[in-house]
Image 1 (tube, one colour):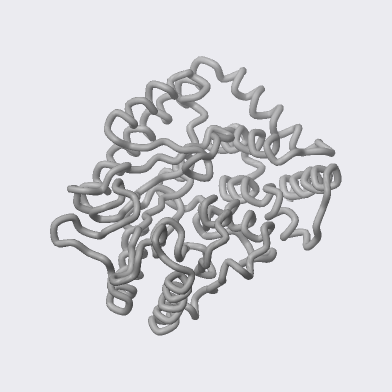
Image 2: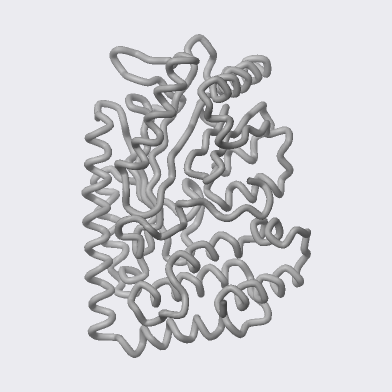
Amino acid sequence: MLAANPVGKWLAATGMESDIVISTRVRLARNLVDVPFIVKASASDQARVVDTVRWALQDSGYLKRGKFIDNEQLTEEQGQFLLERHLVSPDFIEAKTKRGLYVSRDETISLMVNEEDHLRFHALVSGFDFPSAFDVVSKLDERLESQVGYAFSSKFGFLTACPTNVGTGMRASVLVHLPGLVLTKEIEKVLRGAVHIDLVVRGLYGEGTETKGNFFQISNQKTLGRSESEILETVTDSTRQIVDYEHKAREYLIKNLRVEIEDKVFRSFALLKSARILSSDEAINLLATVRLGVSLGIINQVNLSRVSKLLILVLPENLQAMLGERLKLPERDERRATFVRESLVR
C-alpha cells in the first residue's frame, strides 16, 4: 500500500458513466460510546480507540484483507502518498495526535481512526454506483457496531463532532470530470444549482483543496433529519442531472467547435508524448484534456482507465514510490515526463 502498488480499483473506469463520474464514495462518521470526542479526548483515550478499532478489524476478518497503520509509523512523504490516493484527508496527515488507518488491499475501503471523529470510513468504487459503495460501507459499519458500540441518540441519531454530520453520519459524494461545462462556461451556473439544494462542491482532494483538471467533488452537506436513502436519492438525482448537463455540453462542443476541441486534445496528447519536463500540475491538466478526447472518441490510442490511473501516478509521492527513489527537482519533473511518454506509447 505504501510502495509501488497498482492504483485502486476505483480508477478502473468500469462503472456507469465513467467517462464523467470517476468514482463514487460513501463515507460514515462514528464515535465510540463512553469515550470523549476527539477534541476532548486524552492521549490515553485516543490510544484506547486505536487499539479497540484494530482489535475489531482483526476479529471481523477485515485485517486479513488490508493493512492497519499507526500514524507514528507514517513519514510525511507516506502521508502525502495516501492523500494523493484519496485514502486520507489533509487533516489526518497533519495531526500529531494518536491516530490509525486501515486500508483494504484494493483500496476500496479506507478507515481513519481519530480524525475529526473516532471513526471515519468510506467505500470508494469506480463510476456512478452508490448502491455498491453503500453496500460495502454498510457491511463494515454493521460489523464494527456489533463489536465496539457507537455513540447514538434516539432523538438525533449518530453523534458526531461536526453538527452537519449528526444523524446518519453519512456523506455521499462523486468525483466528476466536467470539462464540457467549463469550456462552454456553464459550470458556475450548474454548481450554483448544486449548492442551492444543499450540496457541497469541493476540489480534487476534498474540503479546502483547489480544483485541478476540471475535476470536482460533489456531496451532501447535512445529515440530521434525513435518512440514508433520502441522502443517497438526493445526491444520485443531482449527479444524474449534472452528468446530463455535461453530456449536452460535450455534444455542443463536438457539433459547433469540433476543430477547436480536436486541436486542444491533440496538442495536449502530443505534448505529453514529447515533453522532457513535466510538473505534476501541468501533467494533470494535459491528461484531463486527453481524458476528454478519449471520452469523445477523438483519441483511441489509450483508454480511460490508463489515463485515469496516470492522473494519480504522476503525483509527486506516487511517482517516487513507483520509481523506488527520492527525487529532487528538476529531476523529478524529468522522470515524470519520461514515465508519461512511455505509458502513452505502450
